[in-house]
Image 1 (spheres, rainbow, N blue to C red):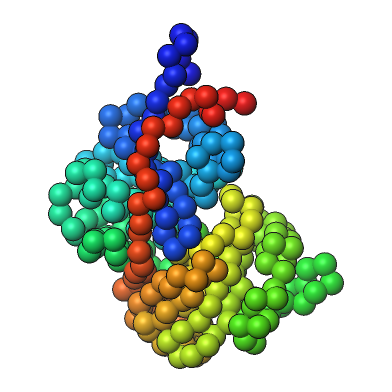
Image 2: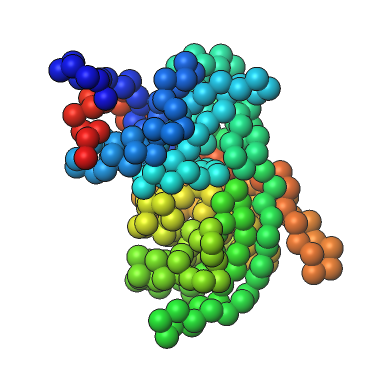
Length: 289
């Protein structure tokens, strides 16, 4: 914070990817250090008290690819990857002139992300998923679940429900929170997805996200996880349209390879809108405890 009465102002974009909203800051000049960032993120992401968002992204220079990012959840915790955030970050960099071509590559903790920008539509290729586990039982607070796990840049658990009616009635906050903190997924914890398959190329998903610690209106890596696990269980085929809680649709593309009981996925893409809500200056008046 400033030592005089002049307010510090931070230029930022507010963006949304299918209802997942983010504060994005150009940090190519290195003004914001990693040491100070968690507190700034936590305060800026508070809804009604500041800008409010599911997460905050710093765009920074990289010697080998177009740029790198530092991504934080709303609680100030760092995250390896975020599918919707990655799409928003790619378009932000293009709009700000950080990159001047519509096909770009940028670095995340989960690996290099490739993106293609066409107007407000962004398609990203994510790192190959890993850690696939299918159909394992887990009881939480007396309720039995049949779960599946995959890491799509961040860890995801997926539980399938019979239809949209059951999905709409699911206790996503209660069940998701209990599973997210379950000993089975420690120490990292897991995002928890509830999904219903509607057709071979269509499903609906609701997600409890760690770091936000609530249900979000969309989760890109969760949509990927649900689609891939649905394919591993022979319920869906690429491309899969994923209807999010916001009502917007994300599209997941992939190639599935099966050798006996071994299932692997490659060429995994996520496509959807990455919209600018507004560009503004954040005053430090709301960045104080």
